[in-house]
Length: 119
Image: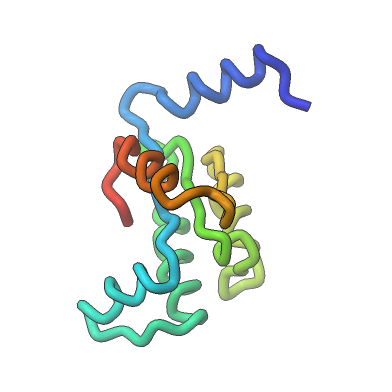
Protein backbone atom coordinates (compact mmCIF):
# COMPACT_ATOMS: atom_id res chain seq x y z
CA UNK A 1 0.00 0.00 0.00
CA UNK A 2 1.32 3.44 -0.94
CA UNK A 3 0.95 6.10 1.72
CA UNK A 4 0.66 9.83 1.07
CA UNK A 5 4.26 10.45 2.18
CA UNK A 6 5.48 7.71 -0.17
CA UNK A 7 3.42 9.12 -3.01
CA UNK A 8 4.83 12.58 -2.40
CA UNK A 9 8.37 11.17 -2.52
CA UNK A 10 7.66 9.33 -5.79
CA UNK A 11 6.33 12.57 -7.26
CA UNK A 12 9.46 14.48 -6.13
CA UNK A 13 11.70 11.78 -7.61
CA UNK A 14 9.89 11.89 -10.95
CA UNK A 15 10.34 15.65 -11.32
CA UNK A 16 13.88 15.86 -9.95
CA UNK A 17 15.95 18.67 -11.54
CA UNK A 18 17.51 17.59 -14.83
CA UNK A 19 15.37 14.47 -15.12
CA UNK A 20 12.28 13.60 -17.10
CA UNK A 21 9.87 10.83 -17.95
CA UNK A 22 10.54 8.82 -21.09
CA UNK A 23 7.42 7.85 -23.01
CA UNK A 24 8.45 4.47 -24.44
CA UNK A 25 4.87 3.32 -24.90
CA UNK A 26 4.77 3.03 -28.68
CA UNK A 27 2.09 0.65 -29.88
CA UNK A 28 2.99 -2.01 -32.42
CA UNK A 29 1.63 0.18 -35.22
CA UNK A 30 3.53 3.27 -34.05
CA UNK A 31 6.82 1.44 -33.76
CA UNK A 32 6.19 -0.03 -37.22
CA UNK A 33 6.35 3.48 -38.69
CA UNK A 34 9.64 4.13 -36.90
CA UNK A 35 11.10 0.84 -38.11
CA UNK A 36 9.90 1.32 -41.69
CA UNK A 37 11.70 4.66 -41.79
CA UNK A 38 15.01 2.88 -41.11
CA UNK A 39 14.33 -0.35 -43.00
CA UNK A 40 13.81 -2.61 -39.97
CA UNK A 41 11.14 -5.32 -39.97
CA UNK A 42 8.49 -4.90 -37.26
CA UNK A 43 8.85 -8.18 -35.39
CA UNK A 44 8.66 -8.91 -31.67
CA UNK A 45 12.40 -9.75 -31.50
CA UNK A 46 13.27 -6.43 -33.19
CA UNK A 47 10.95 -4.47 -30.88
CA UNK A 48 12.52 -6.22 -27.88
CA UNK A 49 16.06 -5.51 -29.11
CA UNK A 50 15.19 -1.83 -29.69
CA UNK A 51 13.78 -1.48 -26.19
CA UNK A 52 16.70 -3.36 -24.66
CA UNK A 53 19.11 -0.98 -26.40
CA UNK A 54 17.27 1.99 -24.91
CA UNK A 55 16.99 0.53 -21.43
CA UNK A 56 20.63 -0.63 -21.22
CA UNK A 57 22.01 2.79 -22.16
CA UNK A 58 24.72 3.54 -19.61
CA UNK A 59 23.96 6.60 -17.51
CA UNK A 60 20.31 6.85 -18.57
CA UNK A 61 19.28 7.08 -14.92
CA UNK A 62 21.12 10.40 -14.67
CA UNK A 63 18.48 11.92 -16.96
CA UNK A 64 15.43 9.63 -16.81
CA UNK A 65 13.37 9.32 -13.63
CA UNK A 66 10.57 7.18 -15.05
CA UNK A 67 9.48 5.33 -18.16
CA UNK A 68 5.96 4.84 -19.50
CA UNK A 69 5.85 1.39 -21.08
CA UNK A 70 3.72 -0.30 -23.69
CA UNK A 71 1.77 -3.35 -22.55
CA UNK A 72 3.98 -5.73 -24.59
CA UNK A 73 7.14 -4.41 -22.92
CA UNK A 74 6.22 -5.47 -19.39
CA UNK A 75 6.34 -9.12 -20.48
CA UNK A 76 9.51 -8.90 -22.60
CA UNK A 77 12.92 -10.14 -21.54
CA UNK A 78 16.36 -9.02 -22.68
CA UNK A 79 18.58 -11.35 -24.70
CA UNK A 80 20.11 -12.62 -21.44
CA UNK A 81 16.68 -13.39 -19.92
CA UNK A 82 16.47 -10.32 -17.68
CA UNK A 83 12.98 -8.77 -17.70
CA UNK A 84 13.13 -5.41 -19.49
CA UNK A 85 11.37 -3.76 -16.54
CA UNK A 86 14.18 -4.99 -14.25
CA UNK A 87 16.77 -3.28 -16.48
CA UNK A 88 15.08 -0.01 -15.56
CA UNK A 89 14.22 -0.62 -11.92
CA UNK A 90 17.79 -1.80 -11.21
CA UNK A 91 18.87 1.71 -12.27
CA UNK A 92 16.34 3.33 -9.95
CA UNK A 93 14.04 4.27 -12.83
CA UNK A 94 10.31 4.04 -12.09
CA UNK A 95 8.16 2.15 -14.59
CA UNK A 96 4.46 2.22 -15.41
CA UNK A 97 2.28 1.15 -18.26
CA UNK A 98 -0.86 2.83 -19.50
CA UNK A 99 -3.75 0.41 -19.36
CA UNK A 100 -5.24 -0.81 -22.60
CA UNK A 101 -8.47 0.60 -21.22
CA UNK A 102 -7.05 4.10 -21.00
CA UNK A 103 -8.79 6.35 -23.51
CA UNK A 104 -6.55 7.40 -26.40
CA UNK A 105 -6.98 11.08 -25.52
CA UNK A 106 -5.71 10.46 -21.98
CA UNK A 107 -2.70 8.55 -23.31
CA UNK A 108 -1.94 11.42 -25.70
CA UNK A 109 -2.18 13.99 -22.88
CA UNK A 110 0.08 11.91 -20.65
CA UNK A 111 2.77 11.54 -23.31
CA UNK A 112 2.57 15.21 -24.35
CA UNK A 113 3.37 16.26 -20.77
CA UNK A 114 6.59 14.28 -20.80
CA UNK A 115 9.69 16.46 -20.54
CA UNK A 116 11.68 13.97 -22.61
CA UNK A 117 11.40 13.34 -26.33
CA UNK A 118 9.62 10.20 -27.38
CA UNK A 119 11.96 7.34 -28.08
